[in-house]
Image 1 (cartoon, rainbow, N blue to C red):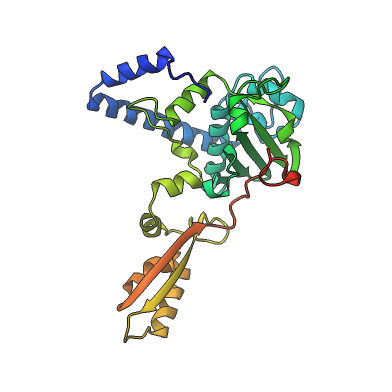
Image 2 (spheres, one colour):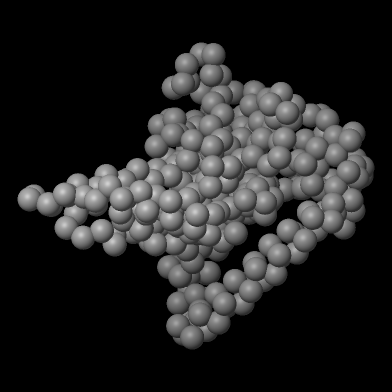
Length: 307
């Protein structure tokens, strides 16, 4: 836990939030949403133009005097030794949010793997993000977030970061014990529901886990059309559908063939079209697409469960 539960700032902010009416809360939420929408749109447009949304320089620009998040897009001149210049001014949540936005600017969801079922149980944070030929991974164990006591390195709360270019490591997990900062402390307090009227969320930085947390299988099936979610290259999820005829009835092979052809043509999943078949029971399993990146593991050569 990075924050102090008795921190007077938590109490003060909760008192302020509780003094607001539901209308005022809704107004602030809508204002924040509009700001997020505008910033994400600006970031996408800047990426398309080859510019950094935050500093305004071309994405290939690099200067040790001007640390910027776009360094993580690997401009010429950026080296592992420069990474501390960036994390000294940008916390974990700022770096994570930027990389998630960059990944989602091209294809939503499928390039951010933070699936809980694929995480090492000993980790508090473990995810991998991809964008073009770049891959970034975060890892933080329970010991990392508490800080390694009586240790020369990593004795304060920290995480580990890996960056790959063309599948080759540029920054290794063991390269740095990256410290969390005060903004991270606040963000963790939000995630732990320490504020009565603030909920954690990623808006345009949603990863695979948030997607499954916020949408039921029924909602995913109903909205899975238009190609983005089921085509082979950009699939975020896949469906496995079993159709069983009711007792005493049969399924028309021609009807199934027609629906399969329609699914290929319209990009509407068979799981949705099959509802038109009468006298059958339908069971659909929604699962992550095999095309999402594998979560990178620390010290993989020493076993999946090690730190």
